[in-house]
Amino acid sequence: VQRDVIRVITQGTLPEDALLEKNTNNYLACVAGVGNVLGVAWLDLSTGDFMLQPALAQNLPAAIERIAPSEILISDKLADDNVLVDYRSKLTIQPASRFDSENARKRLETLFGVGTLESFGGFNRAEVAAAGALLDYVELTQKGKFPRLSPPRQLAADSVMDIDAAT
Image (cartoon, rainbow, N blue to C red; front, side, top):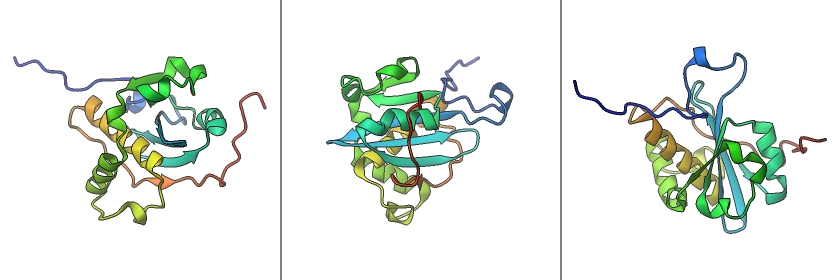
């Protein structure tokens, strides 16, 4: 019998409905930074929902609270900044090389069969980097059995009011 790892299960990559809470999304999120700009991407493997949002550093904790992800991917460079220190139990630190925005753009265009991402929205480089890192992580954990994902939708920065958890 040939043995092999067929899938890696993490907090955010659990797709089985029987193991998830009813009426609650199981989001896998990613925060990426390009220069002083942050981008947040999140997806739910069980439903295929895929969202992106630009974020300011001061609004990031409120955005994370609103999304309520089970797992948050972050680059080792961004982890050093202690941006998400309150979410240590949910963080999965990845090498910064997985957050390259140009490779991420190509990967997204190939996955969704488009010539440009402009058809989905005007994403900034940080949002694209976060989305690409998410796709890379999903491919790594699902061992080639890539789930069906909806095209990415952008949540505009001014479309929601992020309020911290205490408020």
